[in-house]
Length: 238
Image 1 (tube, rainbow, N blue to C red):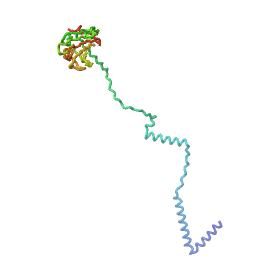
Image 2: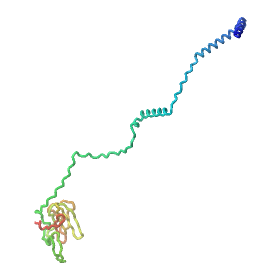
Image 3: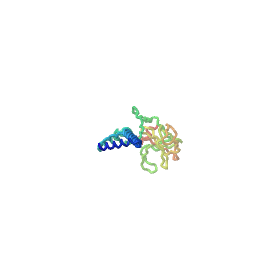
Image 4: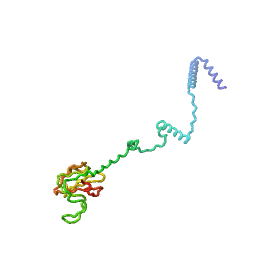
């Protein structure tokens, strides 16, 4: 208190001096300005925000958070991944199978074989039978031989089919020509020692059709077989 009284007395004495009044007024005004500025700055000074306490996150919580974010991204951009495990399947192009008919197609019935009409069997060539069917003694060599058909001494120039049919084969052994015609039902006719054959294998022929001429020997062999076995033609020639 004594210090303050001493300072006050000195200030009062200085105030009463004329020369010191201006100085004191300047000091008071300056201090007032400084105080005012300080008070304004203090009021305008932003208040310190309280520091938020940092939340402590464990490793497990961080893993769960990352997993949740990853699943959210996958569900948004790649939803098909979450549908289940993907399996690679090899897909072959369709073969375009033909549609099956509602009813099975009936099997075509085999064409009936023509019935051989032996009552209309004609002679294959004009002439007489010189060698009959069966066993005979050879006129030159004197041995017994089997003749699987009949042999004609041809007097005509044409060899004709005895029945309608299809040419099965045309053969040659280097000495004579042979023509075989199938007539159906296992029957076939054979013409040998002929030349100038006018038909070929697979060709259809009619009855009494000219198919060849006798060769230079003047003799024509005619045979008749059923299922490959020789049959006596004399029983059917009329």
